[in-house]
Image 1 (tube, rainbow, N blue to C red):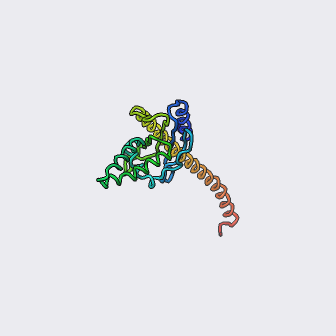
Image 2: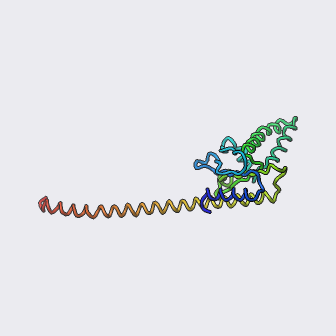
Image 3: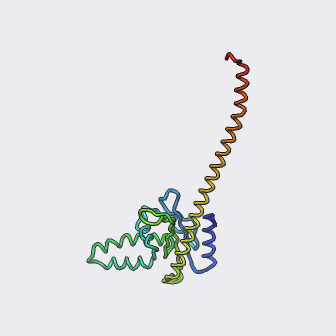
Length: 208
């Protein structure tokens, strides 16, 4: 697939047919790079429409480590709350709460990043993210499941980058065609102008 919309539909159709998940969502980075926008989802309810890069900075940073599990966040939150004698540990509870609330709003218990091949100061370019949930069971995903989702995210990244290359090629071809058309028009205009100039010189005569 070289069409992103078609790719998203194929993934969500596969999720639905597998009956393995109750929810799935796909977010892709917008053209301005300020937010990851919801481009498709599966399951009841509607996930959060946008994950703002600045507002959800902690969650984005956490995703760069590989993936985020709601269950892991819950354990860390509980540990932070119990650390009454450690103010620094307790201070970590608030951002963990915000991350967990965001994942709940996304209807996801697991988030997997979609990394591109380009590098930024923070690491690989984060093209988007995918969320998964199976609300029928606890501890729904093991390491093998997560690895499958990460490989899928890699294929999504490849499709996005191939699509971008394809669009750049199409744009170059379009600009080349416009250039050829402009050159042709210039030639067509130049020929009659030359004839008009010659006729005008004849009418004026050699003395000008």
